[in-house]
Length: 142
Image (cartoon, rainbow, N blue to C red; front, side):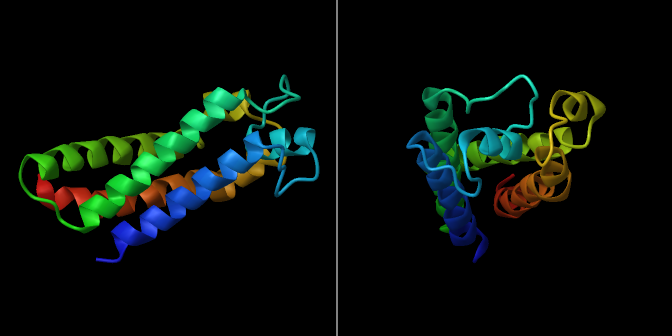
């Protein structure tokens, strides 16, 4: 199944981008303020979130990618069950993050452009697609 390796590549690439941000690489923006406006979207923030938080997000993304890769290898036994539950958890997290992007409280908390548009057009749908791909890997195990 291609979903496991594909999700591993996608999620670890996103994790790598997060790590780059902690190193002062502002891609795809030109400076920190522009990056904040692009990936956080809050008017009260002029700087990126703390490095520890960003590293935590990167670690979670890597764990999600490794989980997807393991699910694609169809592990069995107790390890397979643990991976299935972990995958279900990641599926739920990505689905909820994707759904949040369309709810008024989220929209009012993150109104700064270009984040608001990118979130509606790209970030939230991408999270929902990742959740769907994880669901295809997890659902046969339950």
